[in-house]
Image (cartoon, rainbow, N blue to C red; front, side, top):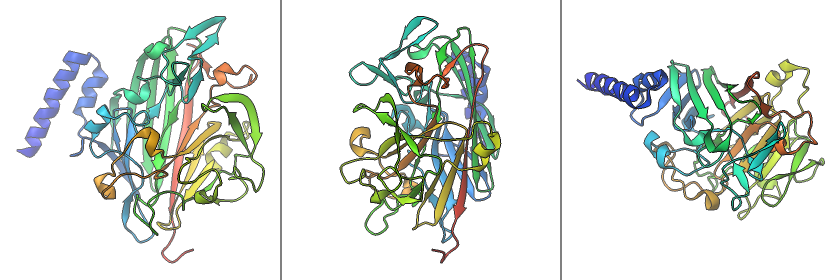
Length: 390
């Protein structure tokens, strides 16, 4: 009877989707089963990941720690319906688009024309993460959901002042101890639209468990072996156009050796870490981007480490800011209470930030016309130290 009720519910949801939305993808989305929390789950050996189609957000990610205990190591919300009402980042752990980060002036120029966008930051002077109703605040269609893979599709019809029709697809696939994300976007109808995507994930490799009196990530170590440079930002977080050196042994040096986050002078009880680093890929060597990690985050307590691989060329690193974001309750899988300041860290990939408004970066392309297709790859490899290893 329970299975019959679920099937009946999905059929009714499908009929409603066709009646209201008119999209075959909406109908297919309604047919895919969710778990009791309204989430879609994929899994492979050593890894299990849950999603919601709201913002195509990652809601849970489970791996076993060094003691064999399963931990949920990302921030998130308990039930998928909560994402519909959430105001967090823009949906906590969601896809960020059409444009990741800030667009200064809430505008950009293309083909001699200035395009004005809907502003949602800095008193109406900037557009942030695609606007108030960007891709992270939309319901994505779900054309595919298998045991170890899931796809989300988005049709952007000139939202937030961005021109044209853009069709975006993101596919998540898990294999043993690995999670890969493939992103593809096809611009239609109007050329010259800016595009810069990112998948946000806030990590806490201890699963928010209290260790030595703290449940923050300040004991995590971070290594950014490709990031000898960073972008100079003004007081509002918008790039000035200057590129700064991360001198060896100084506060922004995460490239020479792994560094404990709490040892950085820029991080304390009152200040969150918030920097955007360059990723110095060898552009002629596609293989190197798949084999050389851009970031390695590790916890000495859980023994879990995650290596980040990407073909994108910037990495926004920031710790959780409970004051700006507002209170966030721990998920039931993580205990009771609220996520503290520095309770998570995001390693958010993108192309160079606000580059559409920096013509001095001539080789940086974030304008995509109707003859172009955009693609990006993100990969995470998980490792767990054997019990007793240092």
